[in-house]
Image 1 (tube, rainbow, N blue to C red):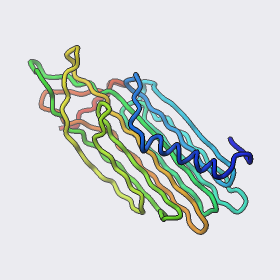
Image 2 (cartoon, rainbow, N blue to C red; image 1 turned 90 degrees about the vertical axis):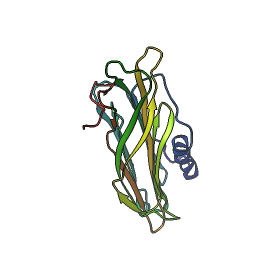
Image 3 (spheres, helix red, strand yellow; image 1 turned 30 degrees about the vertical axis):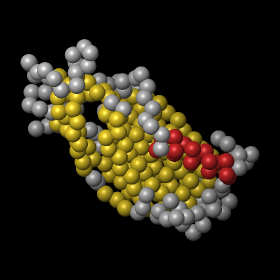
Image 4 (cartoon, rainbow, N blue to C red; image 1 turned 30 degrees about the horizontal axis):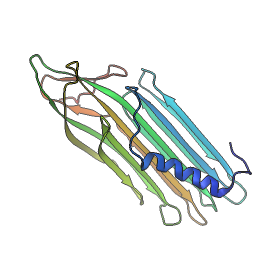
Length: 242
């Protein structure tokens, strides 16, 4: 943990840079076919706490971590907490910042897995797929002096398909779906990489504080009759019940 020798302005820049890396840059893809990564930080006064966790085990469990920058003199604390599913993509994130002269928190999460499609006998060509998903969120206390926000992205084979962002007070449980086609690969199989990434942030200022959180559901795919779908990470079904 960084102590008094780290200036407040430096801590602010660290948090801003972390958020920009995920929320504004194109998705970074590795050679892995499933896994996840969470990282974040919280700052209050001159106390800064980070976390950075990777996961890639084939058991479909969550990795998670959190950090709280404690109350420092007259300033309030800040907390960053996040999790991601090692297996079928799913994310959770929560950031809070108390009323303070300085309290900031941010999280960044990503989770990805490969969906394997099995066609019925005699199928040839592409397959139309509908992705269905949902998430819950809450943003409170957001203002010009204490901003709070979250953003979530859904990608198919590296292509952004859906983006949700909220930077003002609100809450809800949106559901959505979108269509796309899957082509057979060189071996004649059907598979594609699904990725979600996202992050949340909150800021405290004199007389005001804010918070932001979200939780995504697991993803289901609606396929033509006779098709089945499994996740590479754990062999669980990914096709929606009919």
